Length: 103
Image (cartoon, rainbow, N blue to C red; front, side, top):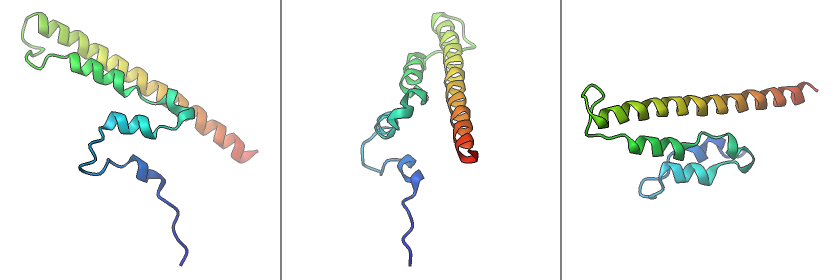
């Protein structure tokens, strides 16, 4: 019987229960160094979310709700920029690999 190669996706599975490793740390630890600049900036997005006040609602008037509306917009636009960055890198990398395959 031929042994199967290790599952490349295994490193992206959740850390074992009780390992204490949080997602952001696991992502940074397992990042491919050459591609790290093209990953979603999870830490920056998380920092925006932490600033949103859970005590106020967007529908309720007040300083907190106005700040939350601003932060919500900032988060969505930052997320869209991160997704666009990852997509550009993915498309360029796929194109490069395709060109090498057909060369």
